[in-house]
Length: 208
Image (tube, rainbow, N blue to C red; front, side, top):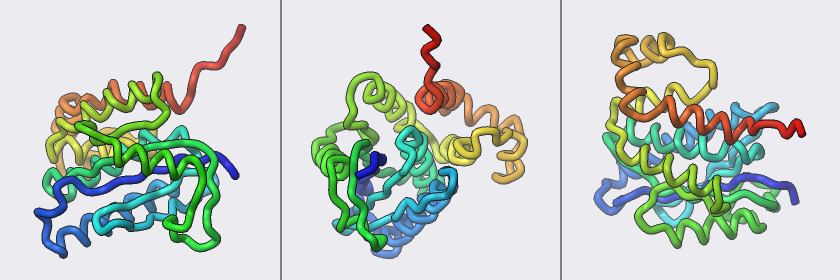
């Protein structure tokens, strides 16, 4: 079994959604997950899988991208669905993936920990089963993300990938001014989040 990151989630207050709204939200999560597949080098399918009605699951073959992916999915939901959010439980570790694309048939410690983490979540919307420093960083990132407005989430969603995307490009993509993008990203706490993600994804090398 190879180490992966598993993200397991379900939509918050989905009972208030119409079947059409629920279906569209999950369709968009699948689209966002497809974009995340392209973050890998080479590209690697995230195998977006629906479960339990309003639930979903993806797998990442570069575990260090897990928090960035969770924030990307959350920002996409908030910006495309007027504030709708998902709970997201992250776990990393060994996993056995099925030959087919259905993650409901997957197994291994990463899938077990991610599922148990979702069941145990109280208050937080994004959590990491690893605990420790990574769990703490995830908790703080989630606290920031829970305060995003639609405009802030839209700017963050576009800035999270590629890493070198410019604010000028985001302004053009979203049809607002560069100044509006700057304001949205600052209010969303993006500069600090971006720094934290870089520290997770590119840890300092031990030169001793």
